[in-house]
Image 1 (cartoon, helix red, strand yellow):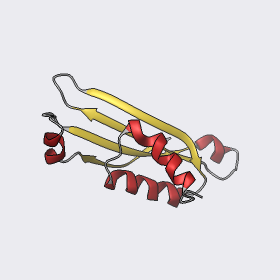
Image 2 (cartoon, helix red, strand yellow):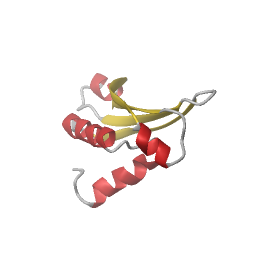
Image 3 (cartoon, one colour):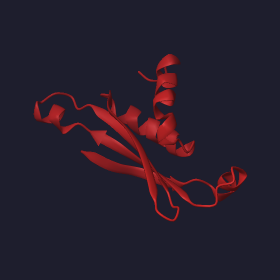
Image 4 (cartoon, helix red, strand yellow):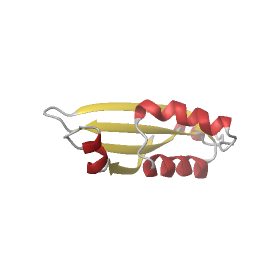
Length: 106
């Protein structure tokens, strides 16, 4: 099950600096793996990031990591960090890897 966590629009000034003239929305979701709950096991959580570019025809890009942690609070901290830093789907895996490397993600 995926639950909406938060969303943000990339700041207009940042888009203009890159020559982008259309709005871009980022959405962040917490994934709750119900199959683990049904088995009576500790739930496993994941994340999903969706980027929507509002051009003539909207373009959507997304990245999902289903099993990331058993710690729901840690997932929410990651999602807060993603929103604060306007993380897009293309960089999700790299940033998660950096969390692991720096031992922030335990």
